[in-house]
Amino acid sequence: MALVAGSAAQAQKLVVAHRGASGYLPEHTLEAKAMAHAMGAHYIEQDVVMTRDDQLIVLHDITLDRTTDVAERFMGRAREDGKYYAIDFTLDEIRTLQVREAVRNDNGLESVIYKNRFPLDKSRFRINTLAEEIELIQGLNKSTGRDVGIYPEVKSPSFHRREGKDLSSALVAMLKDYGYTSREHKVFLQTFDFNELKIIHDEVMPAAGVDIKLVQLISDSEDFAWMKDDSGMATIAVYADGIGPDKSMIIATDTPVGRVASSDLVDLAHSHGMEVHPYTFRLDPGQVPGYAKDFEELLQLFYVEVGVDGVFTDFPDRAVRFLNSRGI
Image (tube, rainbow, N blue to C red; front, side):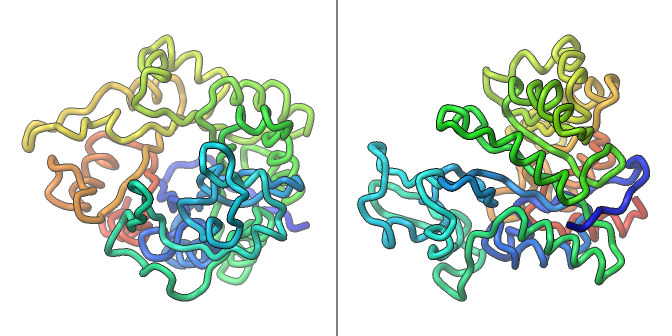
């Protein structure tokens, strides 16, 4: 299997393609990842879950309902909660599904979440394996001469463990197979689960002979409240090289226009030697917070004024263009 090129310590501001160029093509499809690569993203994200036959696939949810036609193709295979879980299907079965733009279900009626994105049920897309995606990105790196990194997430690890699956070990083993073994390689491994982060740091990576950068994802919920002060950051820094907070934790969504002030989250993380990569930056109607007049001002506030090290965005071309226009 291919080896990845080494890279120096990160100094540039990063653009992480959130589920690929998902503002333009259905999320996590190979087409969206190829587009993100062509748009100049520095890293491309992969959410990783496991199938019944232990295959690693790239899918944001542990369920298939939101982005595929699983309910039409496999009637009767839902669990008691009415949802179709990827872990209940083999890879061959998942290969038969058609991927579409994300939809929400309101009382049995489906509606598209982002109305200006790729139209529903047009063209054909499928769920891909993590191996296929890594090979695509590494292949494009070779053919273009670029060095685009990967940014996989261990998705719902506690759920997988309850189902008898060690997702973290399988994922780290695959990264090793494809040459991502050291902190010099262009890979960040992320998870929301702090206990899993410790397991990866203390057990999984040493057992595999791997030492790659880890990122603690953080949401604005009570479960993560302890991480927001100096003591919490110090604890995270024992295991992680960075944090990935919801951007509303840095600048509150309801901040009045003209009174923008950031929290001390970024400074705290930096003081403990960690990078900060907030999520998710979108320019769909209603997705740019009211305190910014447009998407570019939003990027200015975070990249320049607040000083984050990178952002997750569905529109990587716009973030790349912003950084290039300012020589950042």
